[in-house]
Image (cartoon, rainbow, N blue to C red; front, side):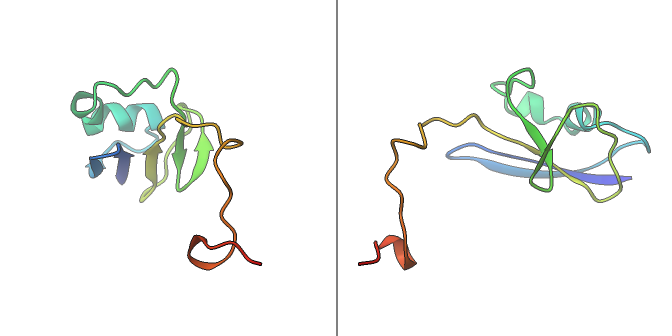
Amino acid sequence: MQIGVAYSEITNQIWLTTEVPDDSTVAAAIEKSGILRMFPTIDLGVQKVGIFGRVVKLDVVLKPGDRVEIYRPITCDPQTVPRRDGVGGEEDE
């Protein structure tokens, strides 16, 4: 079956399409895609993964057409970033 594997760094984004056997897991698809060789900084022991924006575990079995996403860790504290309200980031008065 065909699935996609997506990962993004600040300066580089990639979306690979790959064929995997039926009943493949998220972990198996990531390994087969070759993305771990392309981005050696990926640490699946720390980073979360998902399918179409929903966080899942590495042992989840994939369905045809799934998009596996590898998420980067949050690098800033969301409570210290100013909140933007309104259109275009302008605050409502």
